[in-house]
Image 1: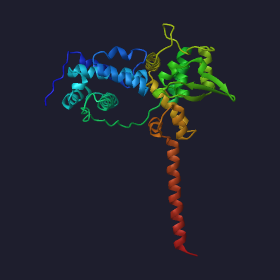
Image 2 (image 1 turned 45 degrees about the vertical axis):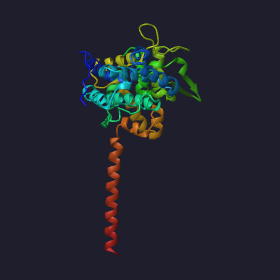
Image 3 (image 1 turned 90 degrees about the vertical axis):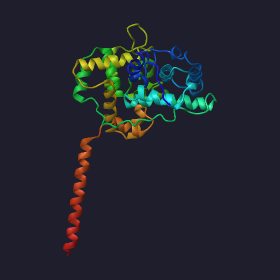
Image 4 (image 1 turned 135 degrees about the horizontal axis):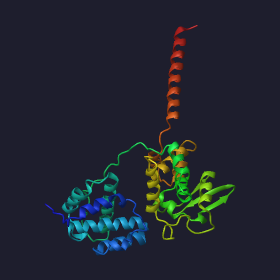
Length: 326
């Protein structure tokens, strides 16, 4: 079956422009209801995902956006789509995106049709042929210590506190944006940050040292309220944090991003504690995710090579002595 996608000239360009934000969009920039009025099945699915599944607003926004754009592209309600419609959409719109974005797009569509089959809206799942792209594994590249010091010594107090929280406490942009002064506390002589409602809705407790505390004091501590405010006087959003940090690094000619600050924290943590604790401190569910962020310790690897060589030498000497006899 040949399927033609409707394209008004802007649809594909808009999809590609939005692709980088689909996995984790700015939750303050959109309301999921704004994009769920084209197809009532999508509205019902989003309501179910919010009320019963408990998905977070950012995920709901992304899912509604993808599903409504899919419906617009195939020019019909999703309940009337066939395998050919979905495959043509994937080949025409999704195929050229980055693997992470492709996986996010296809994941949202699969989730919708899994729900639609279970609720009896459709009898067959037209998304069964969607591919699950393999995410290439790349070596982590945390910001270098020299670049970090250059970045953290020059910014105004507000930006300096953001940088410190990422590089020395492992917070994401979203977690920095959501931080409140009441989340900073002292117990048993140690200062802690309660990271609430992080990625995936998870909470965790992270210890902070003098570097982060000093940066927060320079920013100006309070008893309550958001740690960081935007230009409008309200709590800042994740996108603004990311843009401010990345712009600062680019201005200094540092080839890193906010994401690399968190990778630096994970790498340094792995040199001191075991990988399971690194995953817990960073808010990751699996050790595999932790390993993806942690740069291999070359010095420890070099020591391993030396130890293996010494073992080989000692083994050969032992065998030579045994053959020589008394």
